[in-house]
Amino acid sequence: MTPRSIIALAIAAFVAFVVSDSLFVVNQSESAVVRQFGRFVRETSEPGLQAKIPFVQEAIKFDRRILALDMPSQTLLVGQLQVVVDPFTRYQITDARAFLNSVGGSEDVLRGRLEPTVNSVLRAVFNRFRFEDILSEKRDQIMQEIREQVDKDVQAAGYGIRIVDVRIRRAEFPEQVTQSVFTRMISDRDRVASEIRGRGTSESRRIRAEAEATSTKLLAEAQRDAQRLRGEGDSEAIRIIGEATNKNPGFYNYYRTLQAYRTALGPGNTTFVLGEGDGFLNLFSKPSAPQ
Image (tube, rainbow, N blue to C red; front, side, top):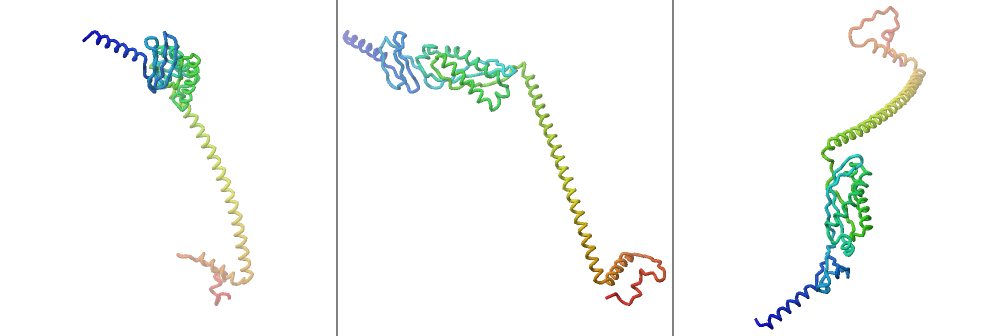
């Protein structure tokens, strides 16, 4: 290889190196900050090939997608109980320049800055609720309040990010207080059950008393109506008998006598001792029934 060829290859390699150092690619999910001697020059989030001054400027790229940041477990006071929680945070870089200036673009530095803020907000919010609330439908409301407060503190600190979500993977009692908590929960459930049972008994008595009062009223009204109808029936019967007697007194006496015979001379051996001329059997001495 001739000296000229070697020089040409060296020049080509140098040009290639300069070109490669002056160009960089920004993906759709990234943003980039261009700095010159440590000073901010510009920020871009346009995807594609970008240019910078070689050797003088540097491009630092950041992921603009939603990122997760784990937090160490913390022991918090929820109501009157100690609870071990395992939180994590989802965040998104919204200002790459501020993110670079505040935490140097390091996730570890960001974790160190966010951890005291998240723990402080968790302690302040959880202390206003009971452990049962964390496990109930109020959980989403509680976590939303925590997220809003953490995001407010982060915006004030100027980290260049927004808090998308704050969640808890687990929430449980320390081993030494688990049994006492279970005992307390059982006692609370028993108390609630006793209150419900007491209200049920009281309601049962009230309903039974109302039913008995209604029953007594209905029976009294029924007896009253029965007495009235019985009186009306007896009155109507007396009227009919009176009319029948007035129309044919002889036939009425004849009919009444036959009814007396049917009652007195029923089936079986019946012995009557009657005196001569007794009027009870007077129909047997008559030739025929009255017309």
